[in-house]
Image (tube, rainbow, N blue to C red; front, side, top):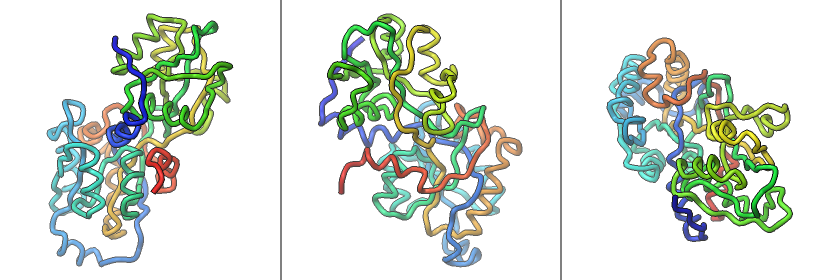
Length: 310
């Protein structure tokens, strides 16, 4: 395993890379404005409804996302085209410029687009199987820690890399009596290996949660559907000694030019997608199997701290 110290240059470079977070499957309600062209005018002008996703590997391949394309095409009664973004930066540029109408986004990517143009609207985000809507970074520590060296995930990983780095930059002590320092693992697999093999080393992990502090406040432990639960499974003596703010799971979002009628159709179609079109449902976020709840742009404001000052 190779570990590397986090430099300020790496931290800045990691912000864009970290946009490639889990992206969600469906909508619940529309946040679109009633002001704009009529539905018929928009249909004539647009012709094709353009959706975007960062396609990568088997987990979010173009072939899988095409199930969503086919479903929306049927539900909207208009052609739907897929824009395959090479990375999160390309996705942000596409929706900010109006090249696409709708995007499957991470929370950080959405916040970046909102800061860039103020022209995107979050519609809804998914939950896991028990209805949790947020992610939270936690520091897991054994009873007798070796020292103040904390092991984080890759610098570009949002939950285990960027969140700890930002907290350290802000002066967080992580509940330690000595000055902490962070070393980054090359991968999440390496991070897990440290937790399993060096039981005296504190490690950062993440879990799903409903709201701020719920995992600690109600005395429950993170569930095994996320990294924190998996680590506690192999290192049961570790406990949560620090937790971050909570961050909403990334939304599906639309460009402000999309009329409210289309937003309403999307809300109806996508909130029913898990039952009406399970292949389409699984195509965009196979790791999240819960229902979908309304999200607004305000839900992603706390991501702005990772984007720096204007």
